[in-house]
Length: 303
Ligand code: CP
Image 1 (tube, rainbow, N blue to C red):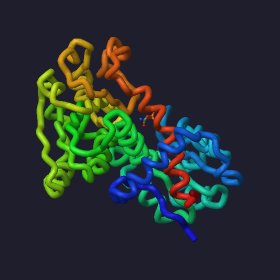
Image 2: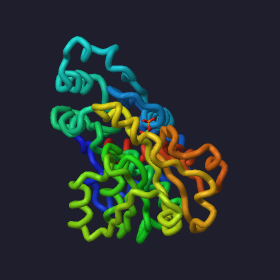
Image 3: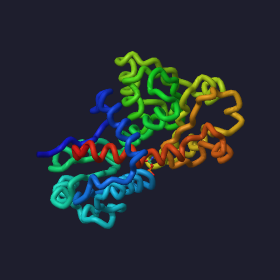
Image 4: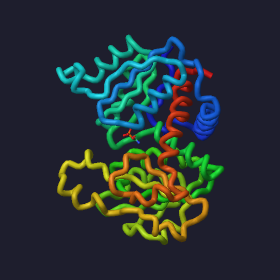
């Protein structure tokens, strides 16, 4: 029987998220397990990736499974015109699990519908990035000691940044307040504002990125302007360097503040911030291995 896919964090209940974070904590303590012995996991990356693909592959390797897949769709038969449905049906014959990144919003949901094996969404266009959200939430939990009642500031490309969209959904169970810092062109889409309103989540929008908003934050979540999503690169040029966090801006921040970023960074965090104890983005990326071990075991129903 087909097991559950992991397509959107919105499909997870509060209990599901807490359970997955508990599993991530377990894998951080016990990283090398043989739970995937005999299993084959396919990584289908139709879009570039460093962290997501390599941390998923590390997770599979540490669990004793094997990997097949591709990192460049141009080397596959999709370049000859094969449709996604046929690719997924083929790979379903070869593997026990598909981990897929695709440029089209909704591609992961569609793949889950046509696949006979579970799909993990490793990012679909500007839509969702649920495994990133789980590692973000694990990082928030580790640094704050709780997920409840936090002041979370999201900065940068809130229009195209799929990690932001997923994080709003995942954190919605934990009574957050969101501070949304974006230029007019990259404001959060209305659908996410409606989501927050319908869940009674307070949110505040800002165009200025100032110490005032930083100083009230527990989590400062920086994001890159997503060049690849712009149809007009002149528009990208206008906003690409709009916000740059530097060390000086952190002088009067809260003691518990931590700076997260899904990475890759382009210009939005100055290098002088890297040595600040508040900077957590490289540890955050390491947490991806444990969170992804938890997700893989969960979709394959391996305890
Ligand atoms: N955070 C993230 O998705 O990074 P990659 O694009 O390198 O996978």
